[in-house]
Length: 85
Length: 477
Ligand code: SF4
Ligand code: SF4
Ligand code: SF4
Image (cartoon, rainbow over all chains, first blue to last red; front, side, top):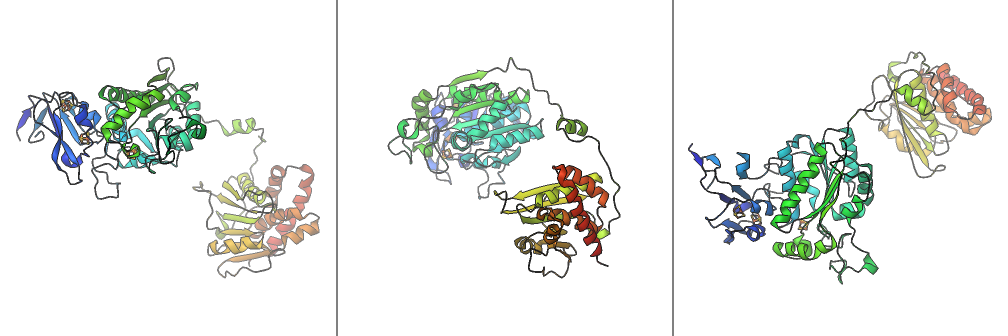
């Protein structure tokens, strides 16, 4: 599989593991997280990354009460395949 | 690469197999509940200190009762409020484990106040996380000990009034007044800066234990959006604007720089030393074992009767005699609150090998000294076992056909010897005479320690002797 090095920070929200509490959205300094207009299967408007502007600061990760709704990848993160997408 | 990604800590299970519901990936907490944040901080710290494998996490009663679904550590769920007591036992039995007591305000500050206070006061080398959300979340939003003055809950619909419900209990302040705790801090989850502080406090409290420094407690002001009937973001504001005024944040005590680390030493005094301390006879005597028929070996004995019939003493004497012959023995009394008149029974094991459990559920020998005991325990006797009963008090006969039965009018025999209360010693003699388990020499030596009043030893000897002859005469041929 192809090896990648992340050239800018990235944040991933798992729609199915998000309870839509909005704490990450409130916490994100550059306001790059928003509620999605659609629901997940639990009936929550999940959070999503607008796609640009994440600084990789990590505060959303600690604001989120869910164990694996949010993953923050910092610049320089090395991965193979499709892990960060 | 670990520092380049922030993702689910390894100290959480990947799949929450213990959760009986179909969804095994999403925790059971409400959206925006602070338990999730604290769980994450703990799991991350366990990862970083690499101690998950030796961590034992105690779940309380409350919303976090199911914390054991999530943490990939050792887990024990304690009775309501008892987590610090359970933690104490675990830490002492496994001094190298990392023991975390995780408790809410109902658990720690109401029903469990005694446990937390004394665990802290003893300076147990454990870590306590106290989640203060000022309400009973799990049961539907009733007042908690930490509910603030004026706060409306289902049980304080007009708001908490000190005249009626008292003031909120301030745990960090209370615990920090004690001498033993090494670290007490109160933190809050309401914004990024304070969550970062909370995260550091969680790490420090765990690290203290890794370094064997002593008792640490972190109180976390944590949102309960459901109990407060607020959305999660507003709940955070409420902590900042209302809770913090009542529960000021900060380090209440930190003597971690001054204290010496615990030295975990095994404390194993010699048997002789204990005997001396307790002023017990130190000349240890040993008697030769008798030749016991195979079927009577390793007896599991239950003795039952009225309180006052000497049931417990009879059991203790049997165990004592066993000790004199270097058997492994156990004696487990079980009686009602009444000293006399109630029912009493005790369980005795006399074995050639070590005893696993002192409980005798199915006795090989049942000694019934009154009718209710015979009726109650007869069905439990092992097939091929032995029932001995006082035929002067019990007017029925056992109905079992697959056991040996020795009917002995022990109360009447004791009366004839001049003292009703030595009937138990008649029975002691009878068991020995019937089974050949003990000789008279061993029994007489037993009496010297079992009978406290020396002027009664002679009559007890007579009782044992009479019982012994009776048992011997009635042996099955
Ligand atoms: S890592 Fe920081 S900047 Fe990126 S989404 Fe999270 S809070 Fe926003
Ligand atoms: S904080 Fe977590 S659960 Fe809440 S909206 Fe953001 S991703 Fe979803
Ligand atoms: S009731 Fe409150 S404390 Fe319990 S899970 Fe829900 S938000 Fe959390």
